[in-house]
Length: 317
Image 1 (cartoon, rainbow, N blue to C red):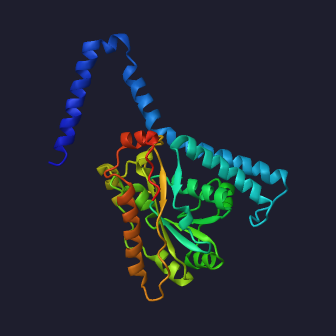
Image 2: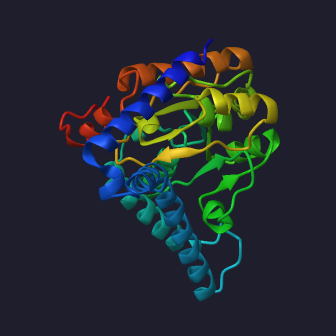
């Protein structure tokens, strides 16, 4: 049976815990140690991702205060919103720098005009938040981002130009000369990709058709160690079993480890009127996988990613 190794593991682990408890007198000295150990372990693994949510919540509160103080409405094209956007960008950028030593390489490859940025979706896409904020600080440019479903913290996401529209809205945004970011893998890639960084796009090719219709280049984007910083339980057999039957809207996430994060921007794939959407999808996928293979050691390793915080030999290509 495929479950036999699992039961053997549980049996052996239980026996080992019993021997250790008897050897050190755990029941006598500290009857609640096992519970305390589990509590601490759960805190270490599952609380850090909440820090990111707390920071976003803090930014949202700051924006509401800023909005009320300056008597602003939801017209984010108003120049008075620029200082609020800069304030949030600096907070997010500072968190990225302090917690992850965040860097972005190849930002000069982004064209002055419109472009569709296609990125690999980690368990939590904090890397793309960091990039959008760094882009605004360094270049003064706003990048729209496609999100799959409506999100809380509406003011924060609206100011950072998250959009929840269809193909027509995306084409319109690009035709106005803007940058637009999209992760074709979306929630599926977030939930079920793993430390091997497999691209999980299924048959999605709408983003390629958007680029063709808008006549804009595609800019590949990949972040080193994003799967080591934040992970999901989506690769476990139980979660996969649940998803096959109930199509889970989310899966448990853990991590928030202070690993080194470096985002790499590849050479733009120019607009080609003779290419099909299917061909462009494959071309984009290859470009992202090339960035991954060049900058990410596979399979990913959390300890190695932590040690890279102290690595002075940075890849600038």
